[in-house]
Image (cartoon, rainbow, N blue to C red; front, side):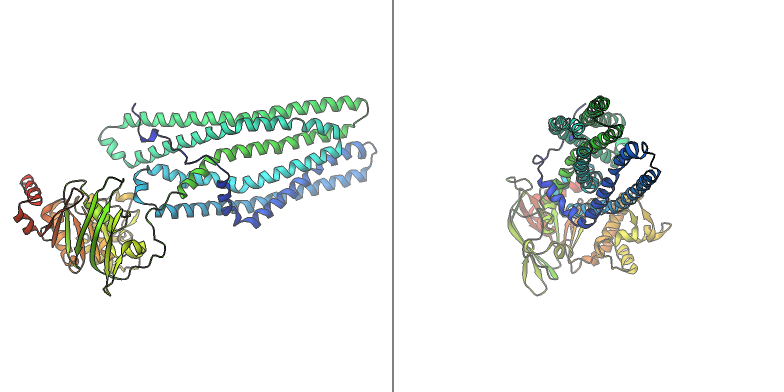
Length: 597
């Protein structure tokens, strides 16, 4: 089976460093006071519980042998009080940390989504949507607990270890030394497994990301898969990716379980040695039965926080790769953004000037080279030429979807001043442009909400007027709920032509000074297109428009037609002027006319 892009693992830009944890502290720091309170409550609960083995020692060595009922009742009351304190403090701590954990999730998701909104088209062009979604959803959920409970639990277990060691040495120093002797061995095992564990979980993260990305694309393209009877091949790819995900997880789990196994083995060995020594010395009356019983409980309590630390460490290592992925996404450069000191673009007239514009998606290859032209307010401009010549690039640069490699684009404001779009804020620029792309994206929700998407303050009457202008009102009104009809994701219940008409109404409702139609009528039948052309002619008057059309017959009435090719504008003029030249446009128009006939 041939490999595809979903078999390719992502690589981290740099190995993990603690700078990622330092960055994560900004999310933790906001909740510092509550986390300190939770840590205090947990510490008090844990320290209080450490008195229980001492109570049992006193019961067995003093109260029972001396038949001291008063002392026995007192110790029993203290025991009940300790249990009540532990339950109350632990419950309060759990409630506090539940809120903190969810707020950390919210903050990370908010920042991550806000950054994704700013990233350029090129970022999404080079990455499957599934790999982006898994970072926003799965990875954030995974790291939130380790950033909240994980840190507190780690500090708490260290405190527990210190106090337990103190209680053990206060009870019997020799037995305590035997118990602590296994700790260096366990630390050595941890340091040996650490790099292998991180690599294993990072690999599992890659495989899981690949699988999620393929699953998302397969669901999105299920109609095409069924049309081309690709179910068998798709199933084979899914099995391979799922098997890789399973194998990577098993490998990572195997290494992680080695940490747990080491902890358990050392615990049992130390436990056995302590009992052997204790029983031997008890025969010589060096230690009492109460001391051995108390030390036995301290053994479990001593190695329990160490085991917990190992588990926290496992979880920490497992989620380090996720934390790296999240910050890697946040570190993606916002190539197209407001320049320092950018100012709002005032209301424009629609006059556009390109001065020596040069651009390439992957320099040094240039799509446009030294392009210059001037458009007066209200003119309609058609861009024609072969596929890949740069027609869409011309309008994409006007919208600042990409930064220029050279030259500048100027827009004239109502006061007559010219403004370089690179020095204006993106919001003020794009809010005065109406863009209708070839791919008409319809969001989940009502048709009314979809048309109103770019202008939330529009009235119902204004929405209907825009729909009437593009001849969408008739088919909308025939639906059961009219404009309140709910459409699914990507407008699955609508035809491609209906989706484009709705998208057209959405664009026109914004009343832009400059209207951009990029193959906007390519999926509409000829009859509907004629109706649409009739409806938009009035709207195009007084508004500068750039039109990229598949059918050249629809752009004959444009004021200017630019033939784009070889990195520039090879021909420019009206339809009649270009036909009279018998050049490139004449050849293209004639060939298309013959094909239609």
